[in-house]
Image (cartoon, rainbow, N blue to C red; front, side, top):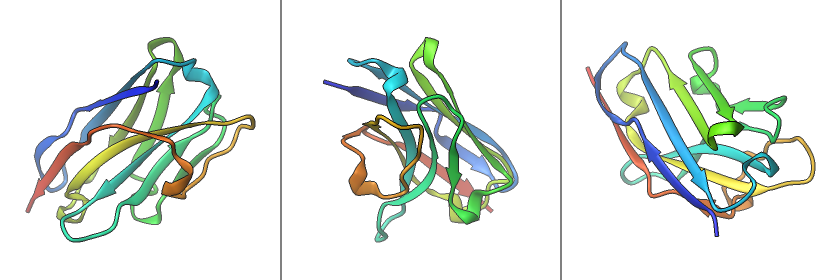
Length: 126
């Protein structure tokens, strides 16, 4: 089985930054596409950012483009999401998700992902 553990969330003031981490175990990390989703209270879980097996392909939701960077360190079995210029609209539980793939692409569809972490809370105050 694949286990995912998120960390790095917390309270931050608007304009601040956070780096979320997701540590994976159980399978060959380099064979998996990895992504971050978020879910605010009363809202659907939505795609935030994703990164392909090799890191060659990345995808971002429009609201975080230009201020967020997803990266991965396969040697450490970890994926990161650096978020800058945070706003209260970024407040949500952030989930790490992975799926094994055979091509170096990213899906933005939450139903494509087979494994999920427990989530880490990000709260941005104004």
